Length: 240
Image 1: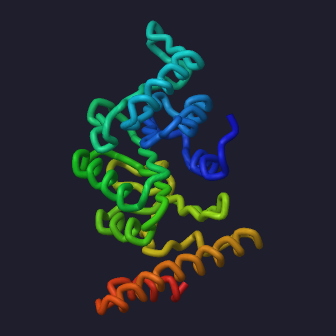
Image 2: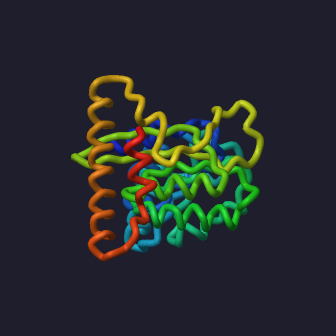
Image 3: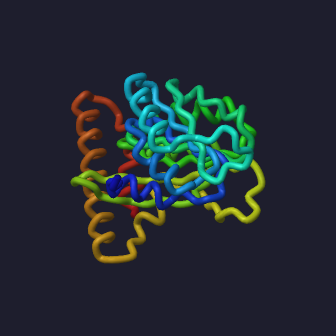
């Protein structure tokens, strides 16, 4: 199955040094299935709270990726399906480095899910691959407050919508032989350094659209006689 540009980009950021990959809010599981097909990790976990979707997905996985429970050393990635709240994923039952993927939901829900997972597993080595639909500034600011670090970030455009994709670490565990990390910027860093003309155009359009969004919010606050709560956000994007 051909992945969308957004899912292809998420896939490209997944390295092979995780023992467990959790595809959360996975919908139909397209990304996780590709990771499973590519044997990206010994265990690929599919998580969503919608029973009908997960039952359908489990049936397809059973058909196309039958698991050999009799083989001690698995040659191929194994899979598990969970119908539960993402905040309740059982990381404590599995050893090794984890990658948790949360994509396609708002930044506020993304923030809540990261919070819940981090609070329950504060000492577990976890990387998060995040692609929020909105509230990117607020999510980035919150990740900084948790002392997370940035591994990589990408800005893409798909169907006239813009997506920031963040690969971050909770800074737990040994980072030897792991990619270097850096501080998380509230507005982004690498995404404003385009490598070609197309990417330059995408970044310029995204900046203009983002500023328009926050300026409209500020005007709405002023009309209600409120002090602007987002002036610092506007100034941060204007300074790029």
